[in-house]
Length: 216
Image (cartoon, rainbow, N blue to C red; front, side):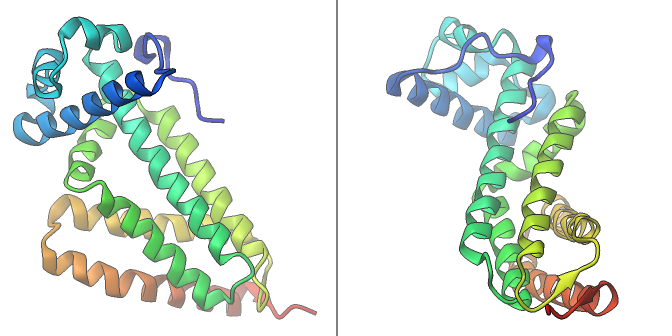
């Protein structure tokens, strides 16, 4: 279950009906747009409400202040990334190690690219807000997805799949963040698409030789 935000960052309410969900989705999209135009420091609830086409009063029905809004947008984005990883893991279960390595790397990268250019803005939000508990929870869940997948690999048995999964997650998240934060050009993204799966495959295959064994 996702981590509960601190009291100061909790939303006032969550949408229960389709119309309310559509309103919150519009607010989230407007938040990303304002972040991209005005930056973290320039974002206000008034600007977001105007961009979303809702009143400030409607905004405050859901979010008591800007930081609660930003936290909710970041959480929604991170949940989408974890969901993409989970879906990919379901598709790849029981596949050979090389296929798992390339498939999960590609799925993770595409989930991050789906959020572009907002992904770059949300890296700033994660650094500025009190999101340590949220990020730690997302990391834990992502590593669990990877470790469970490694436990089911038919052509290798890892001595410590949790350790390998942690290193693999660091490889994925660190590489993607460095590129998307610093560059995110079409050339760099094309390089990521071709090389991140290869990097994952090389790491996991090397780890299977050092820390694994063939199944009985």
